[in-house]
Length: 354
Image 1 (tube, helix red, strand yellow):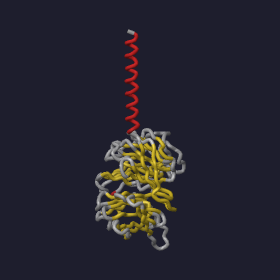
Image 2 (cartoon, rainbow, N blue to C red; image 1 turned 45 degrees about the horizontal axis):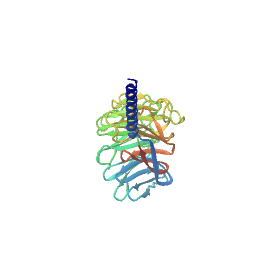
Image 3 (tube, rainbow, N blue to C red; image 1 turned 30 degrees about the vertical axis):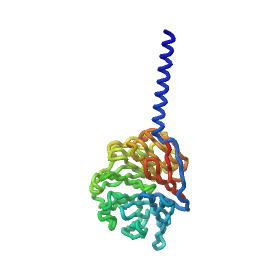
């Protein structure tokens, strides 16, 4: 009897160990464990805005530069815009099927339409004001697009196009929520505006940090509070992403205390109406860009910024560092396991390994 019990015990133990190993293998097999990077190009350049256009990675940069890197032939094509003696810095980029749009961050605001066919540039919007500072730009479709910037009056400075980017018009302040004292935004990675179908979110920062929401491509707006650290000029949301119309993530923090990893991450599951701080005192500090991994059911998120490249497989609850590279400003996924990132003096391709 003792021998039978011993055999049964060993059998149960073996089955338990085997099952446990299999579960761990399944879990680990579905998570990123490491990254491999290859440099697409290096240059003396600052890039905060990139756009994936099939085999081309378009970028907008400092010193009036814009261009693309062709993944098929590993060639870079770059152009430069000069206007008077202005020092142009493009931190916003968006696209339609035929054009790419880039927007100067400061005064004057200069928005250029770039032909995908020959890379030629045409000025389609100009705004001069001492408070002009544009942060982000996106398109809903080939006809309608939106760009946003810091307040020049008592609302965010929001312009829209309804004719494919050929002309842009400002949304009047009486159609927008009023900003709070010291509320503005950060041109960190062209991720202040997030679009999912007709839904649009704009995130702010500074002394107040909130989420502005439009359900109808910018025609009407609501605004919701967030618990992200705020109250100083360089605090608040620097970046946001939504997986779908409900699941979203915001990050940022205190740029003057970039190691602070609390009060800098929050999630929503109701389309931005309510937010909850997550991963307090855990994971990355200041982040300039967050992106959901495609086809991950809103569970996998990657961030870049001062702390390096971080990854979460459980919706932002826990994080692990996959790279210590602190020079990246912005990242976009090409597919479920490959992304392109850019920042100070380089553009790289990141392969996420399971």
